[in-house]
Image (cartoon, rainbow, N blue to C red):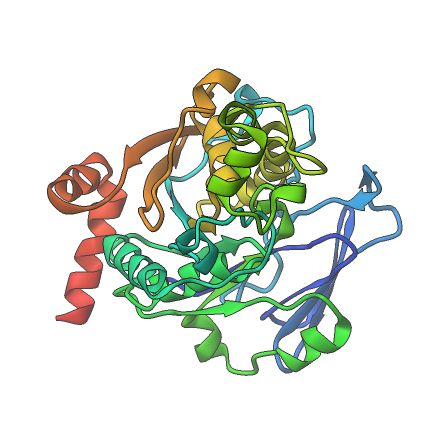
Length: 344
């Protein structure tokens, strides 16, 4: 396997740490301080960093123990960038998974941004999803800040044949960063960074959260509840519409996840029905009318291939269609062949 390379987005008002050699590098808007032992790179925004909407921009830095300098960072796409302006990239896989059934799904309650865990069925769905993607490379994982999405990502990766360990990146404080440092380069090579972002959270259902869906329909009328749930731009009381959810989820995808794909990294996103519908709307260039009819099953992964600036949907890599998935791309077929050789 190639030398392990860790990519991390530098989040709002946060710094990022990577394994690397010693030295100092000034990369435009970023100052990169490279410390010899224990091979930690401290990346912080410099004073001349750009600001947008009151927040600092995300960017991706690549580090490799086989080199003596930080390779060129992938530029942060600006808000007015278009599909046509994308750089050509290596082929990369993008896996989308809606979390498994939650305890409030089971009880037919509006969940939204309430942090509810998976049911036993949800755990089984997450494990099954992992089996379906067990031959597809994963270099970095993104989840929402909600436990049901994080459980789904972690459980899915227990089934991956590469057997790398997913590790949640803690950048919420200096102490969290210090206490979660890894001091073994070999261990780092066998790890996958997991980045949790609130922007990938489920749509916030406002005053509907915690209410029974059937009782709410009886109280307000089926048509009104259907409008709240399935319209594109009409929010429930004090909640988010799908349009509002899409604004944050797609912006985060463009700023933080798409640069990973552009650099050739294989990405998995474990999130929620509405945040994933929003991202699919962007990937497939769906209209607002098309996206409201889009249904995503819990625990069923969807595969996209990102190549030459385009997203190509391959559906779910499962069952009799799996051969078609691998036949579509030589890269995925070679990866599976290497897994077979390594594990047998």
